[in-house]
Length: 250
Ligand code: FPP
Image (cartoon, rainbow, N blue to C red; front, side):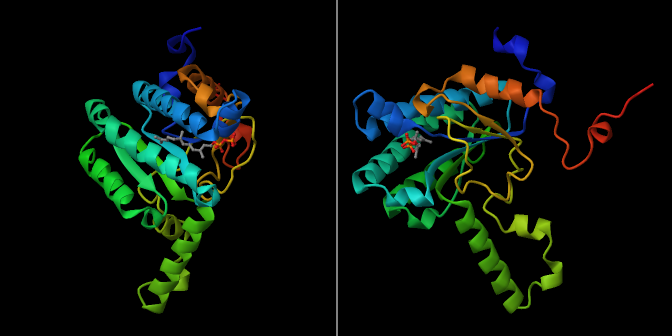
């Protein structure tokens, strides 16, 4: 069935986050090195971005490089960084054409300076776009983000700008990298793994989780639509009862 018939445009998630997993295994299964898998993963990034933009989803966050990924062999780290920057630079005109704004979360200070500058330029070049927000998590981990937020709040308390009593969930959220971004409604993880892997731990508190066995390089719009379709058939209760969410009408 084509997606227009399956997907209810009035019940779209505002924010979809994806843990893109399985590039290495996809390549190794085919007798290639892991970098070949990452190269093919770029096509899937394009597919997911296009699918999200076409549907009118407001935010798409992609886990592109974790804090832990810095521990991979240096040739793989270099290849991933190169691929990220080259893709973003190459795709910036297309992002602009499609009104997509590029944002980043993560410890960008750890990136080599030329890489960071290129990212910053691409973000600035798309800053006035008002359509899909494409958020790349780069050198990101949730524990890093939460620790940084705690340090920041502690410093504000020490400076007399914040009292411990003023620290609420809203204040914590306002100290995270995602302060201007709503929590994800839906998290997709590819490659059959069923873990969160230090990704958006605070923000995923009430997100629906969708796991697919498809490795990231094989992820196409169809898999994106499958996830949206599954999401639309979940009941989000936020700790309430089913009756409270869908009260009966007489
Ligand atoms: C996980 O597969 C994937 C990554 C760590 C990197 C994802 C990056 C890209 C697809 C590059 C381009 C990205 C953008 C946003 C332009 P894995 O290597 O952990 O696979 P494995 O679990 O099979 O080893």
